[in-house]
Image 1 (cartoon, rainbow, N blue to C red):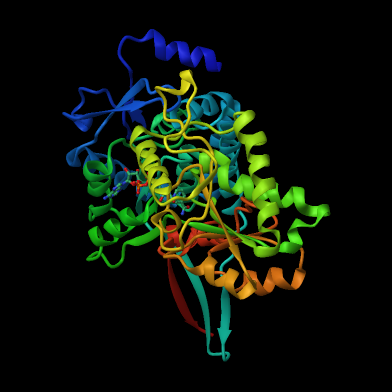
Image 2 (cartoon, rainbow, N blue to C red):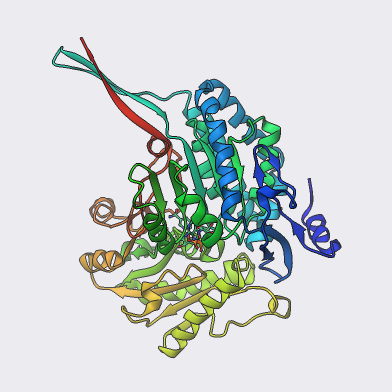
Length: 500
Ligand code: NAD
């Protein structure tokens, strides 16, 4: 176990950054090995300080192929392993993660920029991913029915094969394990690739898999960027399915790369620009505090770097001024003064967010919090910091209202009535999530059922039950994951007809 200070001094004490290695065939591959002979390396920087912390191989196509072959070789045996045995191994993974919770949280916080508290929540969710799917497979049922007394039909499912599991940088461990856990539970093998921006906790996972007794080749973890490593991985004809979480443009690229491989399973969890609807009834004194808290959490948790964040807030006109005042005061107190937002994940991303803030200033938006350029303390100057930013007076057709900024930036806009609120909420190419703040029970269903969003939270946010379908509408993705929906991703189904 390490403390935060020990992890920091480990980084400081090495003259060159730490060096991550691919995990293939059950072992870490030494850098000189031909499997990762990569002329290129990528340097990863600590968002809070801007210092280099480690390098990772940018795995080239021939080495990607070697990892896929390791997964392919492991498939026949793993896919036939008894469920009870797979379950026991995954339960062991979750126990080992639990024992190393603090180590994972510390590295996640250093690597991604998130606060340590936030990192702990995500490690806990990663632990649940393994414990949930380790028991899910023990209680699965498949449908069987008699057709007119002439034939008995039943569904037979088998593991779909070798998967590419690709994740983004915002919740690195949680999102990668959301794929690895069901993939292995349903008997598939995999090559996983985390984001090149945040690879550390995926690197540490190799050790956990070794200790838990996951057979060699069942899960392989390789590092690299999208253009070199990711593209070679998804395009390989040896890959039977892709479970991808990331940006919409990358999702489109993956569809193109695999368009001719009709049978390849594709699950795409993509971007969002989610609305939060605040109705006047949710600002009555008895629930006002909850309304402000939920809207603020949805906007600024993890620096707004959660695909489910509510970055477009729409408020009923009669309470608009009150909401803007109370929301701004709450965010200043909770997130700015108490410093409960972290740094954003990379310099490139920080620059992108700053360009949107400059655009807001050019377009004469009102900054209730934040500014362009953001005000920074001396110790933040080298890191990738953005103040929580609250904007009003942003035009409907401004890029700030349309694009996914994916940072601590929120807009607030008034609406006149319910119909307009629904129309504004749905006026987006995306359809991932929506947050509905109201005390009117009939409205919860009436409005909630008209929102074009895969996930609607009423008076709450980010509540998850791992069996419920997770995924987006429109350009936010295709396919659903969670419980039996993950089973659809990772298994193939055949229907058998037997004469009665
Ligand atoms: P990204 O699309 O740039 O990268 C995601 C992953 O894809 C990385 O591992 C990257 O290396 C890889 N990649 C890039 N190009 C590739 C290619 N051509 N082929 C294969 N792999 C490729 O996304 P990001 O910037 O890392 O993450 C932010 C995005 O992720 C946001 O849009 C956010 O909304 C989205 N996201 C969605 C969800 C969800 O559940 N819907 C969850 C978290 C994040």
